[in-house]
Length: 489
Image (tube, rainbow, N blue to C red; front, side, top):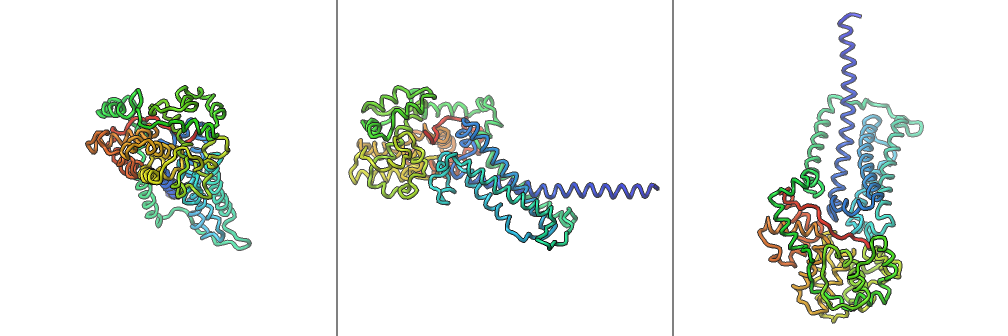
């Protein structure tokens, strides 16, 4: 074979290799862009109620749940990209399909989005969909939705791949196949896809890089500890979470003992529940077994216990205003605050809602409770205390009722709710205190507690927008990981 012929043959082979490579890049870019876009959507939805850091903190103690949740999420995102690539190839090769199998992609995407919300405190999207209890309404805390999402995403991938293998034939009618390989006319499309990948990646990174878990990954503890803000954080931590705790103005009286006597709190069941965790501390046993007129002292050690005993108080206390509560109605038993309360004699805490006169109040006092409750929020979601859909909401409702019954002023009650919230959501409020000190130039004790507890600074969305986003602009200011309390018993 002559040299010119060999050279020509080599060019042909080289061109085929390049064409195949560009075809793989083209369809791979489509899939990658689609997966990246879905990940961005999932993250935005997650931010409605929680964060990646909070998700890891809440689920990592349960390895099976955590690994299954993460694995199904990643698999769903990858399958979404694979399906997008296959579908585009199918359309370019054989035209639009005659069936509607691709609707599974939409269903799978919605299920994936819904299942990516906070797995313990309830989901905004699930509430919109009519599942008022959020993921707590499911026996496996939302893993069912992840599995359904994975299944719905797998179906269109299988159907589209099968259709391609059958050459797009519907019955005996087969479309004329077209060249679906990368060609010159696709260069602009490829450039736009790559541009889209860059833009989505930029948006993602600008959001993710401020997550505490990401900050800690890029700024190791030793490096963060030498930051000029480390001394400021230590100073604020001492104010918010002193070693001896914070003495509140809230006393439980005989309300906890009465809840035990009424079976709202089943003491034997509670003992059994916590036996493997070291048992119930003596200070909590004292509250469960004898009246106390001493104001509660909340510490890093007892904060989870206090939310647990105040939770059924806010849930079961009978108030006329609770008739207007957003959790009252047919879906009462599906909320995290009701279905999640399993330490009573009843199987579902919804049986206790608004049932007992634990903290009797006058009509005027009830209106004060409602006004304060509707003005206070918590970082795990976007709901006010009056919408007590999780344990923290119910506990705060109990605190407000006790404060009003004990003659505290509104300002005192707001400050006491803030004491509890600060320990229950320590990471969020530590960041909030850093925000006010460094960015607003205000000491924590000088900031109006009512403003801090408002939707602007204490709801999940408000905190993310007005506090977290601002602190994130100074990565070194982001606080080291701090504890808090979960949404279960």
